[in-house]
Length: 474
Image (tube, rainbow, N blue to C red; front, side):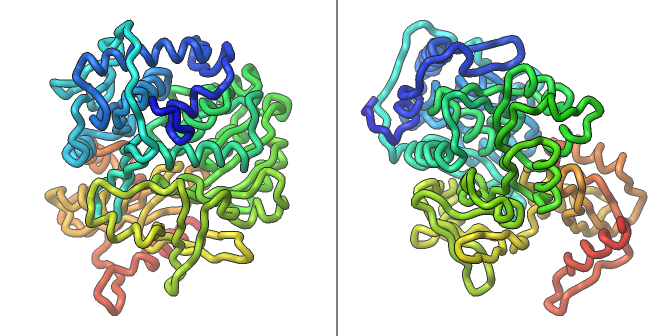
């Protein structure tokens, strides 16, 4: 190891030891415990021929195993390829073809486990600790996010980009080693990685992991573990506040909530402040540019509620003539696995987000999207990916997927279809399952139409379809 402070291995090495660095179910791991587990898995990876620059794809539940695989890969200079726990066989086929990993790591009950060459974490246990030199410019992560073309985009981060984002996030949120984070998001999601692995690992703060989100269980953990901060889409916090066992004294330890994605309205922020008794602020980011804007923990409350914050650290933002937000900073991914997409979206050091925004004295407010992504409970879904699955059905001639506002999830997937035969939600769910699609992209509302509203350009008028949904739900 080089000892450079801009690598993830040195980032973790600087943190103080504590007996409860990671809490998951009935496991409580100190830094020493985690270091021992990491060394063992790193030895197992090395025994399978994995070394610096090799890619290791994993699909694992939220928990210690996923965290250890990340750390073990980084200690060897290998590149973890994080696959979402809910990804189905079709998405895995696409991701694996693009990433070309040298090894697959899976677990029972997950789609990757069906591959003949997959190994489990328990199969990797070796006693000999192994490390390798790591450079800040080395690749440290491949994570997939939905693309406007209907295929997943493999985002590539370096040690430098992730280390920078972790250290800056600590400062902007005002965090210390005494803080406790509750992380219910998958660790294969950029928010789960940043706030469930990197930030607490750098601080020596406690990370409380949940295998799956359940508001009642989350309330129990907040109360018993003294959780002080949470990061996530509004659906998490609405679930807490709406739960039958919610009471203010059960969440009295919470001091900071940061929320991003669709549905983070001023009304949501005000309600969360009132009922959770914490500082509540909005944030904006993506897999390519994690948490690029947010409010400082002591900024004016009005700005926290009505804007998505400001760029912080060395990062910068601007909007072009179309109103598209461009962002720049050390946290940017180095690009995509697809060089053509990299050239299109990463221009002269700036990342074109595809989102529409306004900037007022540095304060950014996201106003819409150039693309047709749907953000359901914090998960980015490509409308064209949904449409691709639907139009493969023998009775559907055309399909258009749009975001339908949802109080709990922010947005959900609604589709309009022209069809030659019966097609309902039950048939739709069966079709998506048969095609190996992820459950969270499966439509939750279907409208059969005779024809689509069209723009003068000849394209479907998606805004008119969204307006039709709004009128029906009013």
